[in-house]
View 1 (cartoon, rainbow, N blue to C red):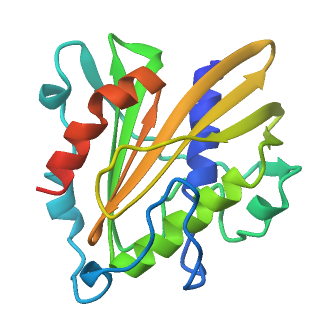
View 2 (view 1 turned 90 degrees about the vertical axis):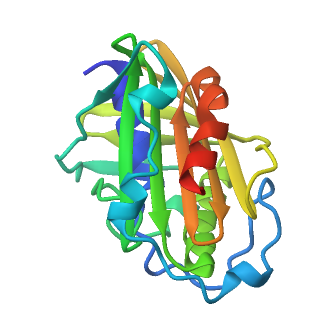
Length: 223
């Protein structure tokens, strides 16, 4: 298994944690804007069919991008060592089924067929409060542990997490840099989540590709 593929699998397992048990009133992360405003109640969630039309496409990204087939297998053999906050999230942390919101879609793209140059987009829709509580809880847990270890199967991966700034888009935003080290190899993945009303946009991948495409992903998702 290539190192980048392992890292992407771990990123999915960590961030796509079941959130149905997330308590209300969870505080936002340091890179998140304060909660509140008229968008907090009353907005109906969008269907997955509607969300799918708002995902980025190869045409949106430009020449050289190819959409990858989505993974269908589960990753149940997964453990986090040295980060109690992640362990306390509970739920099926490594099922790969996505955040536990009713409506969701995802697309992953590789640039020039290189698995080390990927960018992934996920769109979710629910009430503003549920989106805020769910994703905020996960980013907080990850940010609370600057270093920890993830064991996936027989592979042990040393992790470092660094909270970083996000562009001033939407009502709430979270962003972090994740560094994976295993087998003498090192990989950095950036992940940014932005909530606008009842839509949550999450983009992850190499920092350069994420920064290049985050704005267009947000614009199309919230049109």
